[in-house]
Structure formats: C-alpha cells, structure tokens
Image (cartoon, rainbow, N blue to C red):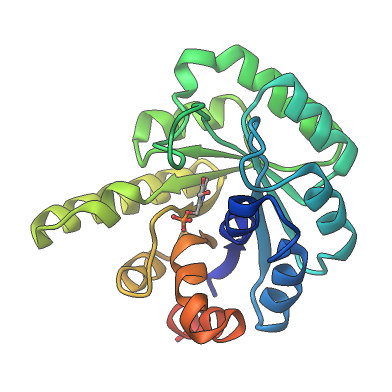
Length: 238
Ligand code: PXP
C-alpha cells in the first residue's frame, strides 16, 4: 500500500509570515500522525524561510513515524543531517528566489560531489533519496551515485491541462518508476499532488510513498488538519 508523508513546511510558512510562534509545525506533526499518515516531511532551506533549526530538532524528538528531511547537498546541510539523523534525507535542488522547488536535481552536473554526499550520509546510517524529474537518464544516474531512493517530480504531470498531455506526463512517471525499481531503487513521488490528481499516481505500483504538502495544508484551513490528512489517506488507500 502506498504510504503518505505529509510535508508540513506550509504550516511554518504561516508562522513565519508574522515571525511569531503560531501555528507550530510540531503540533501539526502530532495531528498528522494521529490522523494516520506514515511520515512527516520538512524542507530545511538555507534561507530558513519556513522550517527552522529548532523545528527540525524538536521533530526528531517527537515524530513517531518517519522523519524525511529535504535539503540541498551543501556542506552546512549535510552537517545538520548528520547531527539530527532523520530517517531519510531527500536531496533537492535549491534556488534562493524560487517560490518552491522548481524541478528535480540534474545529477550529471554534480555527479561526483553528490556521490560523496550520499556516501557520507549513508555511512551515518541515513538512507538517501534523490529528487529527480521522471527522466530515465536521471534514474540511471541516481543508481550510479548509489542512492537508496528516487523521488519522482510530479509537477509537470500536475501542471498539464490537456488530458492527453497529462497522460503523457503520467507515462513518463510510470516508466521512470519501473526503471528505478528494476535498478533496485526505492521509488517515492511528489510535488503539486492534490485530492484531484493523486489517484492515477497511486495506481503506479512501483511508487512506495507520496510526499504531499501544499494541498493538504490548504484544505486544512477549511476542514482542519486531521480531516484533511484523513481525506487524502482515503484516496491513497482505497
Ligand atoms: N517533494 C519535494 C521534494 C518537495 O520539494 C516538495 C515541496 O516542498 C514536496 C514533495 C511537496 O510538494 P507540495 O507542497 O506541492 O505537495
């Protein structure tokens, strides 16, 4: 059964809009777990625009499911991961002025350094996932740098308006997932998944876990966080 990791960065976004203490992503993590989600995901950005170091520290203490830390592969972040020891690190590209992560890592451009960072994290007992576009070359490169997982970027699928285009993007994800599995990589997926577009992604058997944030937190504003998580779980587990 596909697992759900809930990305709670957006709770921290609301807090940071006023530089105050509410809403606390730690409370969000507790509610998300009570609702039955399989994991908590946070992205500690270099500019600390939402999740703070304090959040990560406390989450490590209280998360009872699995804590997935998204981060760029810069040395500062590697040191933090080694100290905090999340259950998994997902390496993502990061640009200072982007609104959200804009696409997958181009592994080829930084193959050697990524391979080194993957090894450092693994030697500390932390499995590593690499966020990539659903591209067969990137999947093979992820294998080459000995990652444990890939997380396939679902953003283009989510953005596709015409049904034929959406099918094409879905097929790219399906093929990338199949190849990753064949190469013995675990397969996660995420970005811009919603209550409306998640079901065809769940149907791809190779995908083990989805990381979903914005749409769940957006719905939580109206129906409450626990209900929003339960509704997503109902779609994923039906
Ligand atoms: N996966 C990765 C690697 C991400 O960077 C994000 C956004 O932080 C997500 C999943 C969740 O995306 P969304 O908030 O659009 O559901």
